[in-house]
Length: 114
Image (cartoon, rainbow, N blue to C red):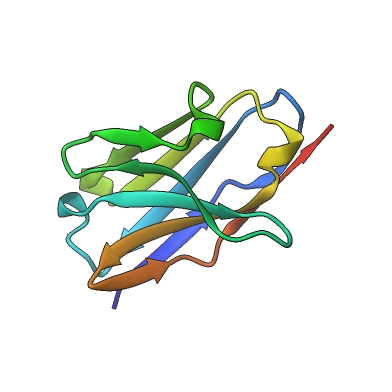
């Protein structure tokens, strides 16, 4: 059974930083592209960043230069380092893997106060 568990969210002031973590189980983590999505209130879920099995990364334009995605394959962990946070980054952040179908964690809430 695939399980994804996010942590690290919280309340931070504009300009601050947070580091999100996701621990995966039930999959051969190292072979999958892993993704971070977010969903703001009243908005659709959107892709934030992706990292392939060999470490290649892609970012949404709205986080380029501020967020960094990384992974620790031996520990089945995914990270999102978020710097220079803005109020518009306020959202619930989800870890995702596509293995035939999409699997999601429960999400971790990030609130950026202006």
